[in-house]
Length: 306
Image (cartoon, rainbow, N blue to C red):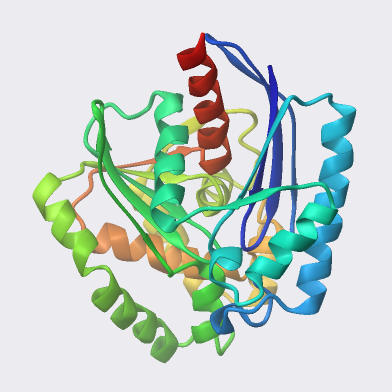
């Protein structure tokens, strides 16, 4: 069976197509488009017209690619931006005209799919905290070799925080402290869960963590690696450099894509906060994320019906 998954994120839309059997999953096509669905007014829970049009146009393009690849099953998953937008339902209806049926998932469902993706990679060998920094929300999952222990989605995505707090270039101390204060209030449940279950490793799911890995690799592409360890001390130095830098300096950083030039600052603040407040002794990148989790869930359905 050939399956396609569309991940309609706040910043980017992803399309991945894979051939599935009960024993194997082989990716045959993937692409990412910077749609910026949360542009300008994500904190007003509104998809502005320009972003709305970009999103539908991208879905029409994806439909053509899917048809060209003779796909049997299509799953289109919408997360924070569409989930919270007052005109999110309008977007879902417009997507039907483009030939795409969208499933709007809850934050808990989003976290479960992310876990499913990371689990499929086989790197969960100790009690770990998975962190997925999206544009609209950030998901945290505590897990171990036996499965998922605790999960929660927070409306603390990089685009939301950037629009609310990024008022100077480089980001000012007042804005940075305001973000920290917000995290102190919002993440008390996460800290309590971590005190209870004591995760040892932080696993960063794709996105910003891929950018961190590239920057730590002197701006060189990390190739097709599905996972890699990141040195915590070196990350802390990188995060401090990103937070202190201005837009022009970040633009010149080798390997940092334009989409993340500003949002990487927020991602650095978020990740540094977690490392500062939760006792973790290792940091790892997982290139398997929500879209791979959805693909593997389809594969699991095939297996259960076999």
